[in-house]
Length: 462
Image 1 (cartoon, rainbow, N blue to C red):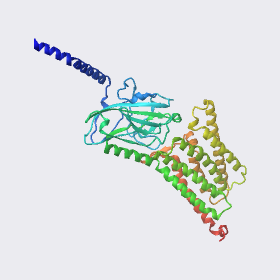
Image 2 (cartoon, helix red, strand yellow):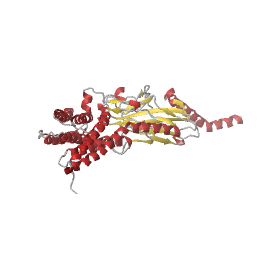
Image 3 (spheres, helix red, strand yellow):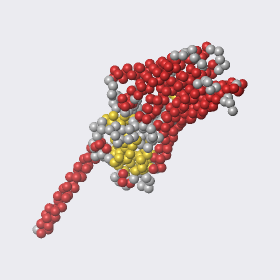
Image 4 (cartoon, rainbow, N blue to C red):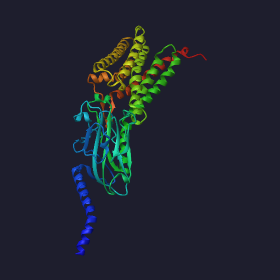
C-alpha cells in the first residue's frame, strides 16, 4: 500500500513534465513532417562545392518573416534553377544561366521577391563552410541563413536598393554555429531579391539567373574564383579597347603641330577619348562595386553616348573637309544638346513618372535624333567616297566601322546579329568593329603623318 502511495505521489510530480514533453514531441514531429525537404536538397558535401539548383520556393513581394526558418513556405511555387547543358547568358558567356522570373509566369513584374531552400547535408567536421551567392542577379540581393543576414550585393539602406553591376560573385564564410548539428547540417537559405523596373524591357529578366552554391571553404573559394574569372574575361575586351582608344587619342594629338589650322585632329582626339571612356566604363561597372547603375547611366547613357555621336560627326566632317556643308556644325551642336536632354528624361530616375504616352514620345524622339545623326554620317561617307583623295577608301572604311559601334541599336533593330561566343566568351559586333577600326585608323594616321614629311613649314618655329 505504501508503495502504491509513493508511486502515486511520484507520478503527480513528474507526470505533468512527462505529458508536456510528450506534447512537445508530437508538435515537433508534426511540424517536421509538414515541412518536407526534397531529395534534391539532401546531399553529402564532401570536400567540394554543390550548386543549389533547387527546387527553390519562390514568392513575389516582401516580408521580413520570410527569412525565418520556421516560416511555412509550402504554398509557394517551386522554381528549378538547373541550367541546360552548355547554357550561358547572351551577353558575356557566363555559364549556368537560366531565364529569370519574367519567363516563369511573372511577366511585367518588378520589385521584391524571395527564394527559399531548406537543406540537409553531411559535411566533413574538420572543414569550414562557405556559401557562394548567385553571380548574376537582377538587380540586387540579400542572403540569409536561418534568418541571419549574411550579406548581399547592393545597398539596401534607402527606400529603394542602390544597384551596382549585376555580374559579380560574392562568397560568404560560415561558422559552426550557422547550422543546427555538428555533422548532419540543416538550415534554410533565403535570398531577398529586388529588380529595378528598367529591366522589364528584357523578357528574360528577373531574379536569380545563376544558382548559388554551398561548399567547403576551399571548394567554395575555387568556384568563386572561377566565376570571378568569367566576369573579368567577359569585359576584358572592353577594358583593352578603352585603353587603345586613349593611346590613339595621344597619337592624334601628336599630329596637331603639323597642321594647326585643321580642327580634325582635336575633334578626333576628343571623340576617341569619349568612346574610350564609354568602353572602359563597362569593365569598371561590372568588375567593382564602385559605380552604381545610376552612375553608369550618367557616364555612358547621358554623357558619353550623345557626346560621342556629336564628336565623331564633327571629326569626320573636318577630316574629310566637307566644308560645303556649312550648316552641319550648328545642327550637330543642337542635336547633341537635345540628345543629352532626352537621355536624362529616359533614365531610371524618371521610370513611372511620366504617363505611358509621354514615355513613347520620348523614345521615338530619341530614336529620331539618332537617325538624324546616322543620316549626317551617311552623307559625309557618300561625299567622301566620291571626292578624289589618296586616303578616301581607308577613311570610308574607318567611318563605317566606327558607325557600327555608334549605331549598334539601330543595326539590332534591323536584325543584324549582335554577338558571338568564340571560346565561350561573348564578343559583340561592336567589339569586332572597333578592333578592326583601331588598325585602320592607325594606318590612316601613319599615312597622314607620312604626308607631312615634305611640309616643314607646318612645324612650329624654334
